[in-house]
Image (cartoon, rainbow over all chains, first blue to last red; front, top):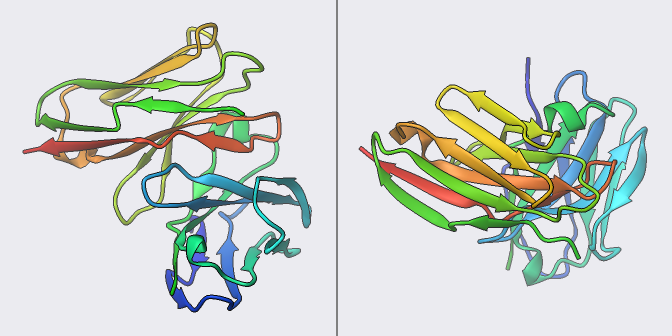
Length: 115
Length: 112
């Protein structure tokens, strides 16, 4: 049973460009959350998708947007990239509302470098 | 602003040593407390989800306790092994949506 799959694993982009990161949740999970982890910090919540809608959003600018598809997979889009967007982007899936009991299943992340 | 604090930031121990680290979180509006283990180049893995004051959970040599009234959780590793080397993260859901606030982690290195 595959866990959470993220692609690509690494990405280098230039300032001002746009990027799309992809996530396939664990089989049976219907909720996808995205986190950004900068060096030396814990993961920071970006947003959460359930039933193809953004349900919760963290303190991130509108340059960060997302989408969830009918098969529960999700994309994270970042426009007008800044150097400060360089980070590890983690996708986490869960089955609503059992996250409180079982926690999230995480992917291994996409390392984004903005130059 | 909700903060989750973890200490120490890093820890180096010898194989066979027992060790523990702390997670502090806001004691009001408690929903749950999550512990994750994150090995280098792998995905964070859920260790425990704790919901009740006084909860104590165990998984092999790793155990955790929870005090919701004073806002802390301890993670214990008995007889550390090199394969326990990882970053241990705790996370606190802000609300019932389970949007997690993470601490910055405790990085454990177990020397053979």
